[in-house]
Picture 1 (cartoon, one colour):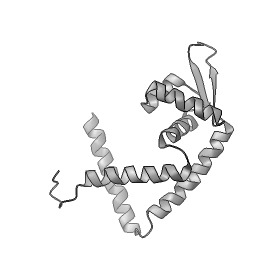
Picture 2 (tube, one colour):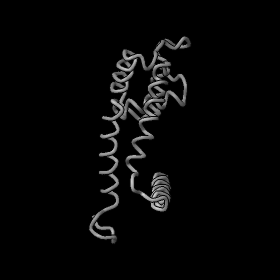
Picture 3 (tube, one colour):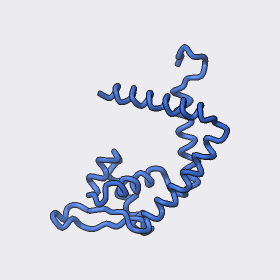
Length: 143
């Protein structure tokens, strides 16, 4: 893919950077990023039906069910039948899940600090501005 900016494609570089950072961060926190998304969504949304959680995360139902059961066994989340309709299961973040998320946030701050080591304030500002522009372009392309 040529881009007029030299031989290195920013899209390919960004894809590899994301993949590598995600893999290393996942190892550091001892949890897959997919499971982290589940915890994060529950932290912000509160109690949700498993179906709603699946929709919000865009995750396959069987995969989410497996994650939820494993995370419940680990004490990170709780599940209960929906009292209004027992065909649905309600999922919420347990107190230990909140504590785990706080620890992950702390590790995330450390990870980001190490990741940006040697990057000047000007480079950081330019990077953030560029990434925001790319995000705007993606949003425009989705419409």
